[in-house]
Image 1 (tube, rainbow, N blue to C red):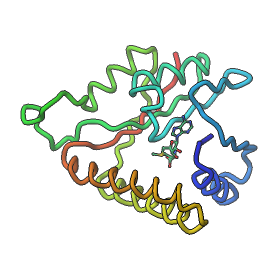
Image 2: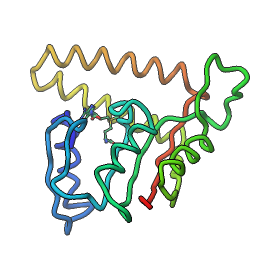
Image 3: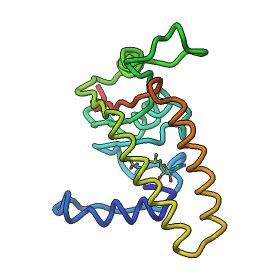
Length: 174
Ligand SMILES: C[S@@+](CC[C@H](N)C(=O)[O-])C[C@H]1O[C@@H](n2cnc3c(N)ncnc32)[C@H](O)[C@@H]1O
């Protein structure tokens, strides 16, 4: 599920390569109020935790769409290991804070995947390709809007390099 046709097309085009036996449906839709027709056994939110305001809100929303034993995966920004919290203007949760938050929500943490700075740069490269495709497909209004959003995002990334990093948490609903 995604609001972006480009993101959905890209994921769907990897289906045969990455998971040919999986029966998948692709939804171009808003995830905020979406309720699966039955409790899901796998729930994933990668890179969109602001939809439910933060890591805790997202983990809670996903948990409530699953049931005991469901696997829940959520990726979210966190404080970079190299950042000194005393030099930061505000509080940014570190890896240990995130782990504690998830545990307090009744989730067992099975793994923490820690993409490095180069992984993040590669990801932004893919976002740049998405923006180019909007412009290329002739929707100049959307193209300009996404180019502007991307430029802002890139500037924030450059500003926060060394402060923000990323973790993907793989958990089980207890
Ligand atoms: C940082 S990208 C992550 C995309 C993809 N999950 C991945 O990991 O490569 C965030 C995605 O959230 C989508 N998004 C934002 N708000 C959404 C919403 N309310 N419902 C569904 N998708 C949303 C955007 O279109 C965008 O593709």
